[in-house]
Image 1 (cartoon, one colour):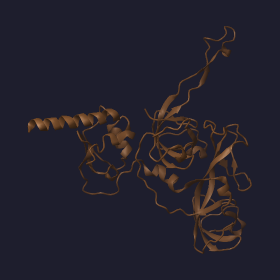
Image 2: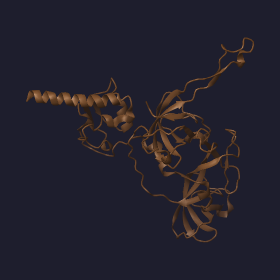
Image 3: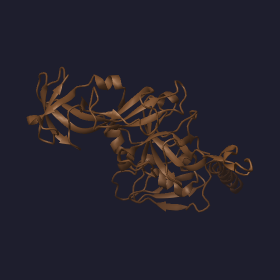
Image 4: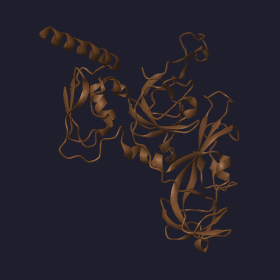
Length: 372
């Protein structure tokens, strides 16, 4: 009996060792951990693994433990030959801990949408505000054109474009650009103009998608052309040219399973920064970025990428002409590792990712690869 027990224990150790080797267990991984408020599945996995996106390698090795998406503050986690499991449940349970901080991604789940410019141009639009004011705030009436077949009391989201994503290489991805939208310049068919000045692609490129942000909600008071709507809430002042779309009350699935890309898309990179609206050119952990790949490229929620900053091209002064060293041969420096991101929302050719960790700032055009 003892021999059988020893053999079984040895087998379990070998099995778990294989998983741990794949996942690269941290040398300082604790045997026991008490879940705290503010923890996420990613942060807990990072305590045990060098590669936290591989948490399934040690969590639920034998498929006999609790659902990792039902872990609560106060739960006691044990790491043993069977992997990581819940050894003791908390006496009081509130909401389970999320995979990533929901506060960082929730606005991009609820308030941002991606569609084509043609679709956007067909949506109803604000033609004026109450008493012909240049801006409308909560409680004011909006006058909306192209609003068809709406019922009295129906709610609509008021949206404004934030980015236009374009492709400049007809099949190549390294020339994709996310243009910010300047909403202070009138441009038919709306008060928005793309900012081409930052990349030299003025007036060029095939549109991939247009991103809009929900900035308010309005309710139909009276049909007609224009129809009258009451602005029930607004995150910013509403102006003529802002568009209306149906309110999307569909609940979102906040459950994510981090995993390496099943087939890493070629030439994937960061196309835009969420805080670029404020003129900021870099981002860091827990910031959202837009990628130039999406569901049509095999990217799904939970896909985890390593971020690399392309190396500069420098002049080799040593190999240059003695009298004209500045004209020496050009050398491309290697890419430098920046950090990791996890995709949490996808569209056909665009997706949103959350920067999970990093050792240097994230920038537009940083490239994405399968994590090592």
